[in-house]
Length: 425
Ligand SMILES: *Cc1c(COP(=O)(O)O)cnc(C)c1O
Image (cartoon, rainbow, N blue to C red; front, side, top):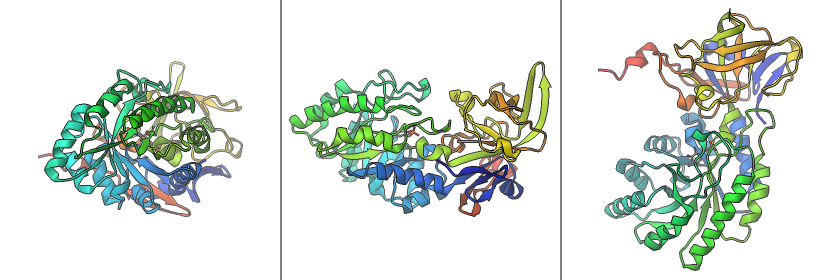
C-alpha cells in the first residue's frame, strides 16, 4: 500500500502530479506522502489492538520534523538512538512518556537530556551502560525505567550490515547473560529494570525470526519472574519488511497474527519500533536525466541525484524500483519488481554524477526509453534515504516535499552553496 500511482501515464503523489512539484521545487527532490505514513502506523496499531501496545516509530528511518509532528499529533511514540533524535522528537511535540531510547553508545550528555525529558524506557545495551545510567540517575534524583536489550541469536536472513540480533554483533547482551544482569541490577532502586527489549535487524521478509526470538525471550521472562523480578513490558523492536518490491513483505496483520497469540495472557505490555515498514514506500526520490550515453555494451542514464542523496544501492545492495514520471499508458500499470517482462524496454544503468564507481541506483535495469530532461522516480525512498544523505562532492542536500491530498509544501529547503560553508571558519 502506498499513494504513488500512475494516472493516464503520469505519476501522482496522492492527488498531486509529481512533474508539477519538479517544476516548482526542482530536482532532485524527496516527495513524501503523509497518508502513506499514517496508514501504515494505523494499520500496525489496529493489528495489535487486542493487546496493550505502544507503537514507537523509529526516527532514524526518516526524521523530518514535519513528519514527526503529524505522527506525534496522531498519538504515536518514537524510538530514538541519539540526543539529536530526542531533540527532534521533543521539538515535534512528542509525548516523552512514549519515547524509548536505544543505542550502544549513549553519552552522559545524551543520557542526562533523556532523564530530564522523562522518557519511557532506556533500552540498555551493556552492563557498563546500566551502571552509568544508575550513577547519572542518582545524581539527577530521577528513577527512570529501563529495558534490557537481549540478543536472541536469531538470524533474520538480511544483509550483514542490517543484522543486529545474532551473537557477535555489538548490540544488546547475550540472552544467556541476561539473567546475570537481572541478578545484579534487577532490584536496583535508582533504575527500574522492568522490561526486555530485542531488535533483530532490518529488512527481513518473513515472520518466523520474530516467532523464534519471542519464544526464546518468553522463556527468559518466565525465569526472571520466577526469581521475583518485575517484567512489565516487552519491546520487540522493528525490522518488519517493507514493500521495496510490490507485495513482497508480510503485512502488519501477518506479523500480528503470529506474534499476538504468543503474548496472550502473559501480562506484558508490548512496544513496537517500526521504521522502514512505515517510511519506505512513503516517499520517492524524483530525479532528472541529465545525459544518456553508451559505453561498450552498456547504456547509461546519468541523473541529477547521486549517492550523496541516496546511498542504499551501493551500501546495502538495495533494490529501488525506478520508472519515468511520465510514461506511455501501456507502461502505467506495472508491479514494482526486479524482473519486468514487458515489450519495448531498454536496459540501462541509472547512475549519479559523483566521481565514484559506487554512485549508482540500478544496473542493467529494464526501463521504457528515456532521454535527456525526463524525470525518473526512484521508489521506496522514504527510509534510510534522506537521513543518510550527505554533502559529498559539495552537493547540497535535496529538497524535501510533503504531499497531503491535493496540496504540497516544501518541508526542507534545498541546501544552497552558502549552506555548504555556513559552519566553516
Ligand atoms: C533502526 C532500529 C529500528 C527500526 O528498524 P526498521 O528496520 O527500520 O524497522 C527499531 N529499533 C531499533 C533499536 C533500531 O535501531
